[in-house]
Image 1 (tube, rainbow, N blue to C red):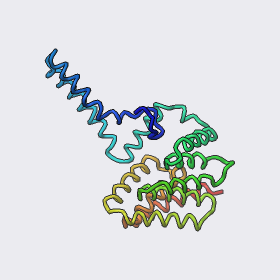
Image 2: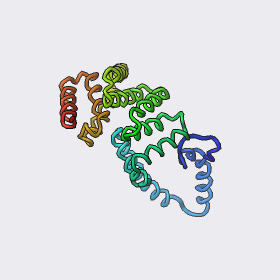
Image 3: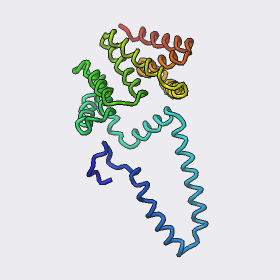
Image 4: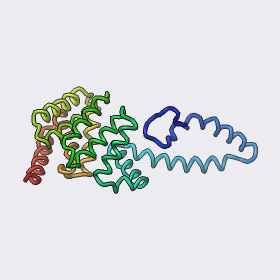
Length: 236
């Protein structure tokens, strides 16, 4: 909690207080019970906390819901980040990488920032590769292969794009069916909220591969047709 040992790019992290606060609350309740009747107070507190818990649980019903909640919090708490221009985003992401070079998320953020700049072509590919090397979870590796493949497509690296898409598909094939179904459900919910492949190409390709692995050929073909349609609209 004191940050003597660095635990990541966090100013505060209240989760570290969960266990230490138990003893303090027990002591406070014990002391208060000698002064007043706590039953009415406990009933009110229980009702309030139950309602708050019910509301908080709703944010965890799916990956898409959790991400939307994250986005809402970020927009409300650090509006400055949403007003940065491209170069400022790159500089901020580079500082985050320098602060924690072993954090794959920091390299992904830098790759995303570099992807919209014009003066450093293909640099985002190296950042995605670095993030991939630092990532061990298969489902996260699959997403990074997706990012790499989409960047390859943009730069005309067709062989590399095909290889990365195949790596992503192979990872999904090895996942348990229940995990594939859950991941596909979360991706489809995200796509429903962002129905434009040209703005979110990686997530659409991810949905396509998941549909293929799940044997949902007609839906996969429809997704591919949609991707091609938007690609034709944006091509010169």
